[in-house]
Image (tube, rainbow, N blue to C red; front, side, top):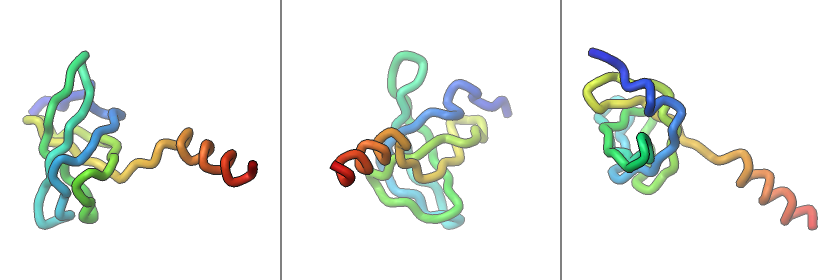
Length: 83
């Protein structure tokens, strides 16, 4: 099964939370000039609405994801706290 290299490194939102080893969720990813959905697998359960990073493609519209916090958003929070 061919990997979908274009989706690796993209972030997206979970439309349906993942269940860790119990099963996948569903992610909406902005890729190729549009939005596409994929089955999303993660090591630990992640809730619906979580922002995730695609770290691997399993082929056939399935990806591995991890929870993602944009580092720029974290820096903005530090600047507000320091101000």
